[in-house]
Image (cartoon, rainbow, N blue to C red; front, side, top):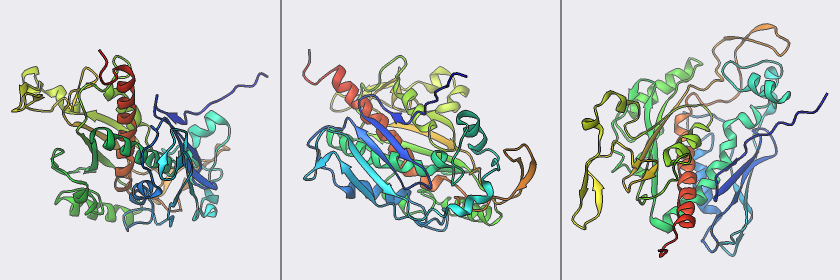
Length: 370
């Protein structure tokens, strides 16, 4: 019988390319970043700050797995500056406790990747989910930290994400004025008074052995007009691909999103105007900063919906790999709600899309070119 080769999509980006590696309970996880411009100041502290926001065990609302997630830069940086060569970043796994997953060796967790992964590859890592675990996102966050530095230095792009909704509890947050400090002041990472209700709901759901989902909104400010490449590499299309690649992601919107379907054209259109300095702007931003697949100089605003965590203590019906019907009450350490820890991951993926768009724009239309 002829051998069938199966490949996984571990690399993201065009000019700024990132490849993540490692499994949840393997020796380490990390990323290789290729395409970062040379001579940019970069220190491990730039990366560690973002990883600290993502790491487990940081408060009572997240998984109690105790990982410091200490980053080590293995290549691509010399005397505090990037070389223009691949940047390899590694984080060792220190608190795996693989024995906690022994009861899942031959059991498929409902709505998890277990069965689908086994069906595709004929083998799976049942210890913590392997590559299907959200621990893979460490590499994304590390790469996102590098991308943020490129964007900030090149054009002052600022990216802030926050929890917009937990279950049916929705916050009213102004994307133009929200600050990271306000987001980080809340355990839920929601800069709104309803964060108290959100926290209580997450805690109650956790105590009941269940989980809950919600929505994260992200805003990128100071994005210049002109980024994005129609027709198949529209900026919103690349953002959708990036954010929908996240574990537990189930929906994507930009600007008015699905609410735009209920409006008329006159209600939805963003009127153009010239400001005091003669710059062309829009008086509203229902387009979410993107028109025709290209950034228009307004803030880019997106939302991504996350499902409830699949692995829960509540008893559920499932089957074993032998086809036996069983009841599963999963053990192990899991987030009752992925949203608080997903905030820096959403920011990272947004940064990776935008830095790629920036570099593609520089290659397509270099400054000063006729």
